[in-house]
Length: 125
Image (cartoon, rainbow, N blue to C red; front, side):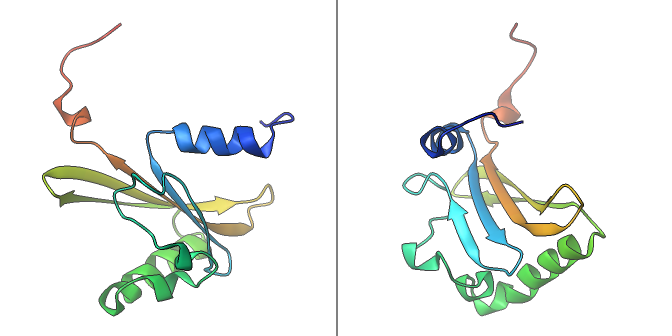
């Protein structure tokens, strides 16, 4: 629930999360990402406003289209992947963003470096 948050507060919250977030709208247009300088997968500023398919290598466009299609259709609400990148383990989740009536609004991509999380043992209370 949001109550009178300013755009500066919302931007601050999104930048503070320990996650890389990207948003592609319902028309497959790249609209947002956070952590521009520190993200695992850097995005050129020119990607904003472009179709997401034009922001990927040709070899991965089919996979991008497949993920978005499944999320748009409602067959799934999310799709998970994990990869090894430069001695780090990255967990990636693509999630359908839906309005109150269930209408597809876009896809949210969330990346998290889980390398250090995987090392946690026991509890810290």
